[in-house]
Length: 312
Length: 176
Image (cartoon, rainbow over all chains, first blue to last red; front, side, top):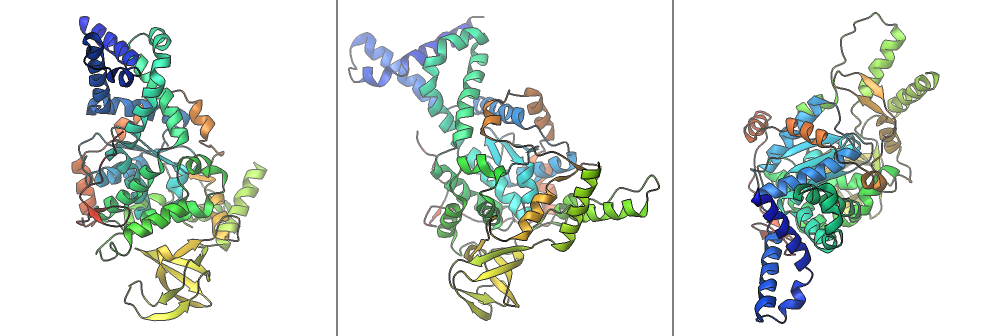
């Protein structure tokens, strides 16, 4: 039982020492002070390099936060589809072995999220707006790039480094234990981060990587551009508010992608814009008629099943 | 119920009137209308900047447009879509259609508008059960690869690029 306790005291030491470290380091070499500074530096370093297990735990906490606001869509076929596509895309990055998980979440809003360790969530509003599979691939690949580059993990560490000390005492006692304390801190920092957004530079980088990941996987690299065009056209709409607040302007993103892509990716052959399986997924065959229905009802049903594509 | 059926009726009419791909936009800069979606294709017309176009379809980095009764292709990056406030009936169509929800049995149901705004996220209570549910959806790399190959997807060798388009092995993770 000494281990958790040691971990706890180390954490307390870490949070207490951290802000003091840079100042004290200036007076380094004076016995105890030097010692303290070294220790803090070490903890600081260890905070910089969060291991994969902890990264996944943090990502799981943050995914739970987003899912608490919008749960998974109850459609096993669609969920399975995005997992197969997402996992395929992830195989074309430097982190193919993360436990990647993909989900469509039940909100009309247009948005997509990723959290550290391989969690990717796309809103139903955005899923329904993509014109074809290459656009869906573009969105997922952009989110995958955030995970691969640890954009949220690094931003979260920054956020927690500044807020952890103030909250350390109370929260830790209240929630009883290191794990509870960390989860609470992660969620708190996560709410700030996911409503404020990443640095713009991280978003542009995820766009540039996203088109390449999609292209490597056999899709048109222009899927993401198509999605950004949709966002650009509909940016003033209500369902876009959080996405617009947390991301650079879509027109700006298109211009930057244009500069980076040029015509370099135009020669790739063959590339897929869409797949029959995706078309079928979104246009399921109407269910067999069980009860006798009036001709009028059948006509309405036929019209609605034609309406299903939701393509523009 | 009456309202619902009236809404569905209106929706059905709306969809019938504006078939899929009713998007409009404009050419960003002076460009050429190409006969086919290739850079070396024959030019069928010259387009001035801000020329309005109707978008018919998309293929790779190209969009097929209809302009003054003529149909041809322009690069996707040279077109911007009309915004929601300007006339673009296709978007109203999509918004109306997004009210419809088809569940896994293929039955179409209507749902209310569920948003996910800043406040929803701020007030969210973490849901570990949903995280467990998400974990059950994961597939193996083998399954994903087998499926992709069966679908005919062809992998490509493509390097990442920096802001200016210079190829790079991998963007460096930013130091914080």
